[in-house]
Image 1 (cartoon, rainbow, N blue to C red):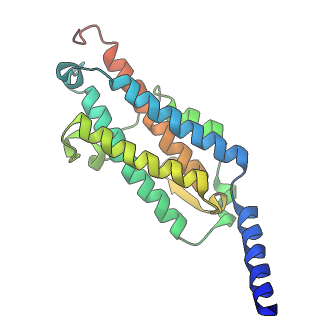
Image 2 (image 1 turned 90 degrees about the vertical axis):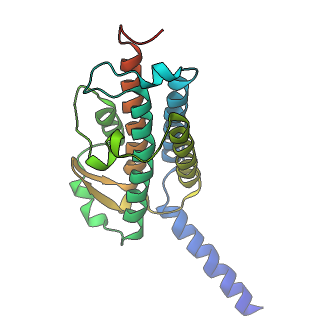
Image 3 (image 1 turned 90 degrees about the horizontal axis):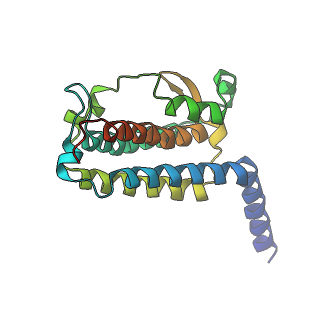
Length: 201
């Protein structure tokens, strides 16, 4: 009986320690809402588009709606894989001082399309194995659901796992925000394509 009590006490103590390191309710809510809202926006922008509209390119060097969706889906999978890899490594809270952006600043920076960025070769539409808009949307939805489930339930100390990105350092919580903001960045790109005067009616 005494041993059982000791085990129970240890379990409770560990639970409290985990809870102390977990993200706050406000942080969890903010990330979940951002993930859901940006997912919804992708589906809303492609809903009802014809094959001609999906394939239309405003210029030879511009992406079509379908290419944007393929990029969103492939990026979602790759970025989430990178985020998971960061969490599997030892926590490195000593690098927190290297983070130069707030959560809100990070989201705004990623979503700002006035700052043009060339993607890596792997994520160029022609190098993505997804065959259609439908296949890309299915992949995106599956990976986004995994990410939403993760952020709603995790007790990981996301703020103490720091990743070094090409634009600077972010913690693993910000990595999740980055993924959500990235999909919105390219949702805006889809809207730009649809706003082109030559977009098929």
